[in-house]
Image (cartoon, rainbow, N blue to C red; front, side, top):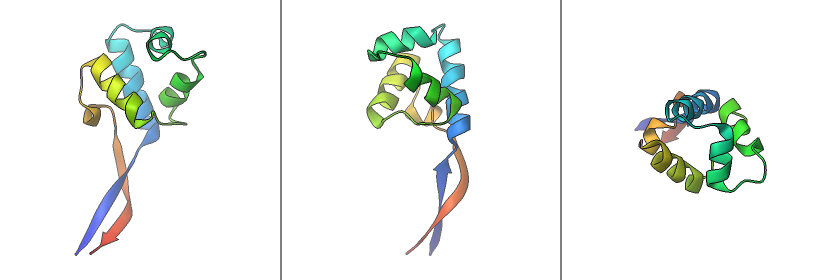
Length: 84
């Protein structure tokens, strides 16, 4: 049996984070303060799809935005194939 494993679409996930932030009425600075980051660079990297939040930060984002983690992460094409 072969099973396709999808990869995370980082750019689309970043756009989703941006959309959720805007819908929540939050600025990048607001998120920076919530996470206690010294600079907003990590948040900008998430939004541009050049980096992904850690699992802990994804959990925090899901609570902040009131959505499931599955509503933040966007899956893309199947890049992996698993044979059993």
